[in-house]
Image (cartoon, rainbow, N blue to C red; front, side, top):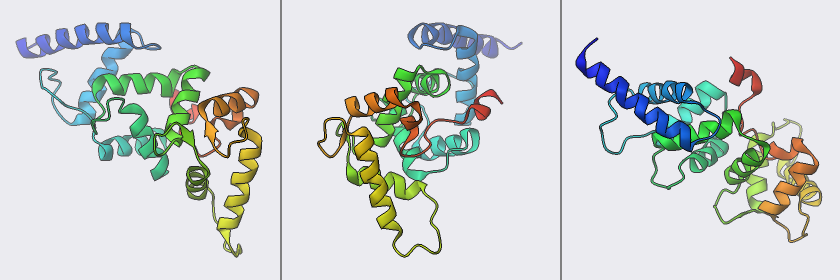
Length: 203
């Protein structure tokens, strides 16, 4: 084994130990594997001595599509925002592992926060009628016989608001969303698939 690869292995092990203490749901060995995978996804050698490196939006979206079968552009952009906690336009190694922790093994609480963040398209703390309309319109299959498919989506938005808008202010706050999901877990992905299918996770 070369001196360089032994050094890289040691750096990765140290980094994995630190990250596994900061991020729930992954142990040190799993964190090491995720670090190595992250470096492979970057297409660079396993050298953690570089300054800012991470996944840009295009590479991140490609990974979501090919690895987790997520295909909706709006949802993938929302997932990028949810992972990129410091809003620097790059998903860093730590952000990647934190995001995967929630995506793959998160508690219901963590997944509620994640999905809400994905669906809150403008980051104002609410899922508005307009955001619901965009999300639902993008995720529903159009029927060729429909005269005005937008009317059906508008009706669906109104039905959703009646079910989920507990304070009746015409938009969903985090509290509204959380309460609705706790009452009916299927509403977690009410506005589009933003979590991987369990069969994708186990394969």
